[in-house]
Length: 191
Ligand code: GRF
Image 1: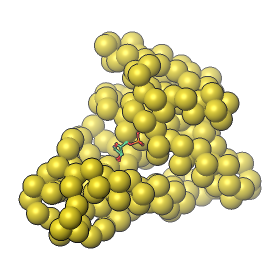
Image 2 (image 1 turned 90 degrees about the vertical axis):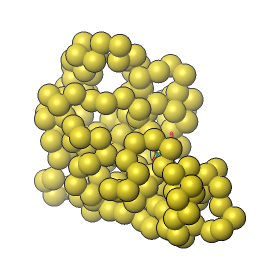
Image 3 (image 1 turned 30 degrees about the vertical axis):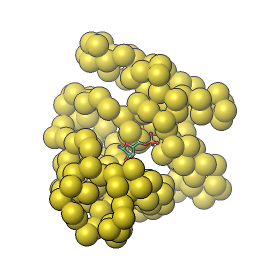
């Protein structure tokens, strides 16, 4: 990633599928004077993503693509990304797999947050698995996105203790709190 010079923020798109609390965190972060990014586009694969409300709240353009036809949707996304001069993408609870050709175009410029200490627990239900396995530690990871699920180079990781009283829900809450800090720190690290 090119070092940021001057005060110009890198135009960024955030992809979501759900509640978008990480999106909200990134928007708030982007508004800090020294933040290297501005959030200029929100993309979702479903109009049911409640996080889409932040588009209106923060006056950011949003687009919904159902991804039934990945190729067509990705080419539409590329068009709008080009139009809006987006140079960086953050995935935040985005549940669709992007194609190899799409990812190639954003090599080193697309990152994701995952609620586990990767490479442990790729995919879904990370907290359930951690509790079931009686793990002593859990956490979250920010990593580059490649065509292999949750496998790109790790940028930063945060480890937290799992308490004996934790269940998947309480653990998710604890980890999510750390996700907000980690996502900011990871972006600062790579710019
Ligand atoms: C987060 O735990 C994120 O790490 C995972 O999905 C969750 C999304 O939460 N990929 P939110 O939509 O950002 O609130």
